[in-house]
Image (cartoon, rainbow, N blue to C red; front, side):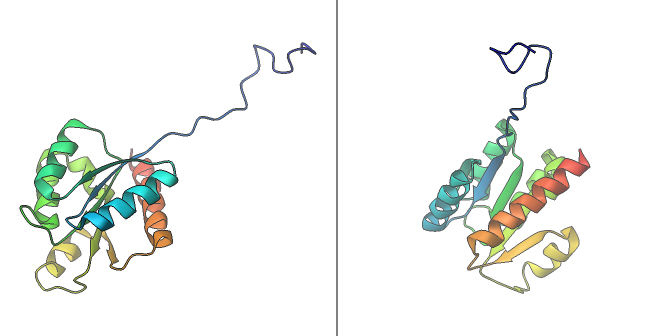
Length: 145
């Protein structure tokens, strides 16, 4: 080892690069969308946002996404319809969804959520609960690769 250069060229670097994960947040509540974006960015995630499923589908078709946080009740294309579109076009993303809803046990969405066995967070969502769900989803998707 060179005393002037404690890390020789033959030794591996101890510095580890952190992979930046890309999270797509889909919600028609723009204040909540912005709060989620800020909180996720403060935790070193790259974040894209969409206010409905149509906008979100465009993002999914053109960008790699590691986690999708999606509201269920939205105009233009609701969360369940967005999921079904992703299921047809990019099925490997289906296990990366976290659904957020203010309509717990809504009969319109209950059969859908039971069928897909997704992570569901009921509003209001604490930031710790959201971050824990993102971490678990990333861990689960890493094992599936």
